[in-house]
Every structure is written in structure tokens, then in C-alpha cells.
Amino acid sequence: MGAERAAVQEVQIETEVAKAPPSPARELWHHFSENKGAVAGLAVVVLLVLLAVFAPLIAPYAPSAQFREVILNPPGWQAGGSWAFPLGTDAVGRDILSRLIYGARYSLMIGGIVITLSLSVGVILGLVAAFARGWVEVMVMRVMDVILAVPSLLMALVIVAILGPGLVNAMIAVAITYIPHFTRLTRASAMSELTKDYVTASKIAGAGRVRLMVKTVLPNCMPPLIVQATLSFSTAVLDAAALGFLGMGAQPPTPEWGTMLAEAREFILRAWWVVTLPGLAILVTVLAINLMGDGLRDALDPRLKRS
Image (cartoon, rainbow, N blue to C red):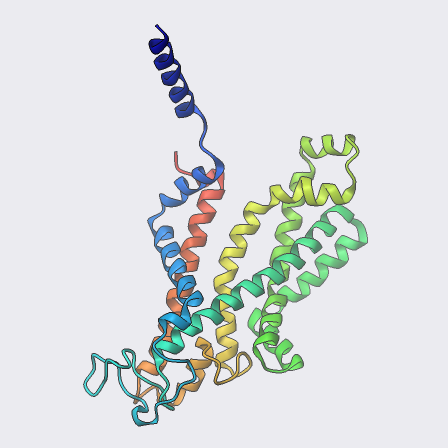
């Protein structure tokens, strides 16, 4: 009897576990994995992160190492190429593959720093505008409108021209151009949440304004902000590459993909690989992050989830 009772209890426990709702992380992954393009994008992003982290172990050579005897050497599969340099060399004999691998570090670092800066400032300004209202809200939103009125790349160029060319200044410039997007999104989400009953209950319970901002309202504003941050990450990588291509971003010999494109412009007709391969790296990275962002948006938005 005791063994039968234990068996019955075990079956009941397994049934209850099976009926229990999945954890939020598991449910998110379930909806995210339904989008095959998003999964492929995530796989590419993970590969890029691994390349960036383990670049010294993976890259065949140092990014600035020069081999003067093989200047503009074609890729290994092309006539005259050497598999010692699988993707060829540039105008000063540097290995293209090694520079592309190290370039992943700069692209991911640029995207991460830009989004962190713009998201942090945008969330603060958006919450202040939503809670303060009045002239404070008007002033904040009009400044954001002025920034949005100027094309983002042009605004970034003006800021870099004032601060001076360089990777750090380019990241600051790009971050400033993205602040209005996060500010407007945070303000709209916060104002929507302020009309709900749980916020009223928190006010009646005596919660202060800072607590309402940070612990009550902000967590419920995060899903759209996460999606916006993911999609803006790819645009930040693209804008930073554009600044590097124009000579206003990372400066040579930094192995940043936009800078590599700028250095290779004059060889586009005689050495296709020095231009095409960095461009493909930018294309694949931006496409992968956008696919991942689309899948994340579908997974976080209840209206877009599949039954």
C-alpha cells in the first residue's frame, strides 16, 4: 500500500509540474525560436561575440602585422593567392582575415557603448518628462524634436567635427543622435503605465516619485525599450562604420570595418577583396542583429505572439 501511495503521489506531482505555466524565460525562448530568421541572426551574433572575445587565439596574425612581400595578395582560392592569407592582404601587406576578426571587437564595442549611453540618458529624460509634466516636459521634448529634425548622420558629423575625429568622439556623437528615440519611447510607455491601477495603488501605499519611476513604472516599460535597443544596435554599428569611412571615426591603423573600407577605396578596381570583405562583414552583422531584433519584438509583444 505504501508503495502504491508513493507512486500515486509521484504521478500527481508530475501532473502538477506539467500543468504549471512555463517560466518567462522559457516562454520567451519558445516564441523567439518560432522565428527561424531570428534564430539564425542570434547564431551569427553569438559567433561574432566569440570571435571578438577570442580574437587573439583565432586570428592568424596581429591586426597591424605587415608582410611587405605579399602586398595586395589575393585570397587563397584565387590565382596568385596563398592559403597563408586565406582572405588576402591589403595595400601594406596586412592579413585581411585577422583584421576582420579584430574588427568584430570594435563593432560590438561601438554598438554596446552607444546603446548604453543613449538608453541610459533617454530613459532618465523620458521618465522625468512623463512624471514632471508642465514646462519640464515641454522643454525636454522640444530639445528631442530639434535633434530629430536633423538627419542622424549629419548630426553625428557636426558633433565629431566639433569634438575632433576619433573613435570615442564618434561613439559620443552617434549616442547623442539616438537619445531622442529612447526618450520619446520611454515617455510614451511611462504615460501609458501611469493610468493603470497598480500605479494608483502604489501612490496610495505611499510610494515616492523616485520609487514609482524606478521600481514601479520602469520595469513595465522595458520590453519595447529592449527591442528598440536591439534594433538601434545594428544602426549604431552602421553609423560608426560610415563615420570611419568618411575619416571622422576610428583612425588608421585601427582595424575597424568602416576605416578598412576608407583605406581600400583607391584599390576597388585592382583588389576587390580589400573593399568587398569589410563591406560584407558590415552587411552580415547588421542583418543578423536586425533579424534577432525582429524576433525579439515578436516574442515580447503579446499581440504578435503565435498561438
